[in-house]
Image 1 (cartoon, each protein chain N blue to C red):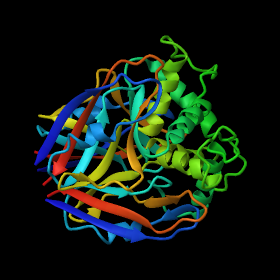
Image 2: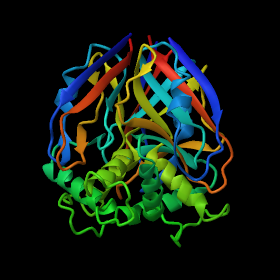
Image 3: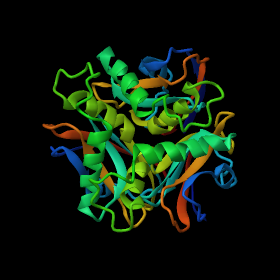
Length: 135
Length: 135
Length: 135
């Protein structure tokens, strides 16, 4: 059995956003592996702490230092200083997440939420594909 | 066919630990994709060099510099200086690994081992879910 | 249904290389999840911008700064200054990518390409395993 659906969400402000419900509400009654994939190279997906909003602020601040827009060695900056840095942040976090599902219930830990990480200053809506393989 | 099992391992000291056997011993006689998922936001999973213990030490030292506890911009530090840094390290490495399996034999390279990366100073046991989809 | 095939590609120069066609040409007419796995610990896989070669140069330059070979705390340097740094870069980017496929067509975004990230100065050929689960 295979389930596959594209959803369109956002646009989001630059930063880290919890989208758990938008994903979980789409899951079919299956058991297996869920892959959520973002069809973009300047936004990404990760799983992290879902309760304290300051975690998402700290993520944004840390990533802005670790992949600084002041890097004068960047060549790919046609769309602005947040262009190349967004690509790097995207690969550090990843374009997909994978997690187990059991009878349609995602098997996430108590404190785990799904983040959409928007790295651009002025982003449009984002396309995601949810695929579930299993029984 | 779908296989899914939760295991509880540890606790581990802060650092990078090889847990290959604890995962491999659970694999069913299937061919397909294995997803190993950690149900926590301050520990993570990765695949890397399995032979020289100094690799794991170097990982710990490098991650402590790349995500320094001296970062005075962190707000989410209620549980100590290793609180927010653990969340960031966790997303950089990832909450799951995926690898191929053939007739129950993991198709890892000769030098590849499965790491549990414990980012907290005083961690409890960790819950992992192993899921295999395929035939 | 499960598809699984090992391919050998390269050798590649140190840097970031697009290998989309080498992967896509192998995909069977299935719908589900594709896992591409690299059986090495000093090269990695990621998905990023596929059009402008300067993106791949910027990636190489940024990773060389973020994981500098000047780090005097590295112990695992028997094979040279690019030894331990390659392991760290490999875990930051990951040893596998996962993406959706529909009737044999990879569901990547317009600007997304598959990168092989070669972190060693003098690498040999690299072994990859492509696995597809689904229908």
